[in-house]
Length: 277
Length: 156
Image (cartoon, rainbow over all chains, first blue to last red; front, top):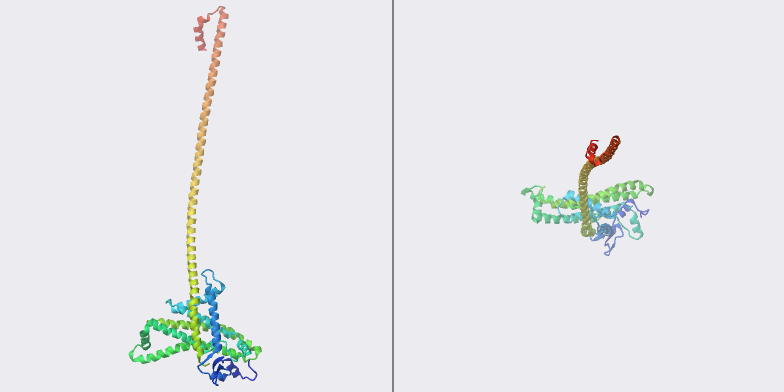
């Protein structure tokens, strides 16, 4: 935990540093022990805490839902099946409203996975910020972030996955020629403006996954940062701020998971639209 | 805060989770939901049909009840009529019988009266003959005067 000698910025820096496995400055491979070591690792490093929590929570999601799906009955459903069906129905309803009724085997499960998985990852934000890192510290682990969605790697990893899927559907539905032609002719359908169109479309194409991933990251990171700032207060009145913020955050984490899912559906819908607007 | 391999790891795990969800989670759950929806729709439809049938049954029951009431009323009226008829017939038969018995009795009485009158007549004629004999003091030959006596007896 925060030692007496640490400054506020050091505490914050400590809290937002991942448990990173990569090449240390001396050339050997291992976990970064200081903030400087972690920052010097570059691309060929991996955030072990992010991967651990995202995989764990993904398995929790799949575990719960597969358990419910295994014993799914069309008769009277049990509590677990009810819960899972509420989520499935919610996703289906949103897909139906935005995407329509085109037959697509991916968008439903994709949206469900995003909604629940992102929600669970966001939910880690509600666990007191020092709680798990403290336990990790006792176990000898220096850095341990518990909210995967406050790591842009996690959110961008997902948004890039969605981006690849939109590319795939663009090629599949429109065909490479029509898709390519659309990039040149799209906003202003005049030959003299083709150079302008392609630049605009490229920016648009890059901006989509970036904004998709960074929106979630930004919201969760800001929320986490406020929790960290609250921990800098004396312990006896932290709850005055932490409690309302946590209650408000329940809304934020659900909303962000929902927004991430809706954005995914919207992007996939755009990839399926063949005609002009 | 740096972008590193984590992104790739997250991408791969994302794909894996979606694939698992596609294979093991989505189909059974949605299928169960569809089937339940269908079963519910069928059940509701059946309920509506059953209600209609119940209404029809109620209607036809009311009709049949009415018919049965009418029939029973007819039967009762018939029976009453028949009973009256029987009573009338019985009355007729009884009065006829009474008449017959009365006539028989009358005939018997008449016969009895005739017989008595006959006897009385014979007796009177005998008394008359005896009286005449005594008056005349002479014997009237009975065989001689038999014709005359019979004539006398019929006149009585």
